[in-house]
Length: 405
Image (cartoon, rainbow, N blue to C red; front, side, top):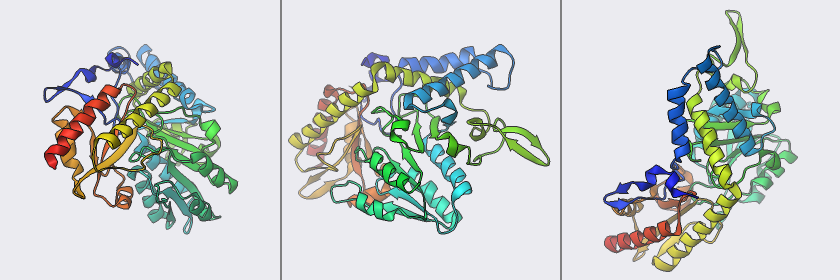
């Protein structure tokens, strides 16, 4: 893995070489992705699917090639099952609206988990309010794992959908989605997987998982911002109404009514981010050339090393879900004389040393409330991070803790 492929890693921050450990928020972009964006705007910038001229045909071809690249990346049965959106949040909002219109009635139930990002909470809350449905939450055990016995008991003839994170954006832990899906499917309940934090860190196979929907963002996967994916099984997507109206998602518009386009276009109203889709395809090609299994193994080893160094070198550190396998992220707090050192203060002093981490509630306030703190410090890894980055972080953290103590 060549760090030189990522120009921003040559940046200096406050006179120090950048150590970027905020990948769960957004990842940095390789030169291949930057080149794709520049190429798009300088060589084939033209609206897609509508033009007979050369530029439009070139843009259309690259957009649809990218759709197939995404389908291959997650092992979808067909590129028709890949819908381009603005990102994970947009994908979940689109699904919540369309699925709600098609299937949710008063008294129906939806299930999420106690580990979710706000993006996988609020759209379902809004749907439950709109349709007078009930949102239920899989509780957490003391060790911060999901209580599957409670989940099993929640499933009922009233349950219409389960939506859970594959990997927690706070804890970095992998959820037992295979069992969650199996139990739901025993009662013919569809399942959506939020893969925003798993897609950059491990292989995905939607057919092997047998999930009904899956969502992720490009910008966490070394791709551009403002574009993401909603995958759905074709049989289910065919039953859902469009979430938005306008151009592209129609076949015919008459004053008497409108007929909708075929999949996937009926969910892609308006001009899509066709430059972003092509750049996303290049990002996926980049990680596939390295190998997602290799990325998973090397990042898991890095996370183990980081957790080990935290425990050995930082007195009074508290790591959340300590000892569990981490995929891309570790959250912790540091105490002095049994008093919490505020995460924001730690993050600020690390930044002064050129080390980028994330502090706060990480858009997962219910989980942070469950932990009984106002926030955490989160370090999160990408394929370009090294043990040297971790060593710099640990030394910087020790210095920050000394100052704040």
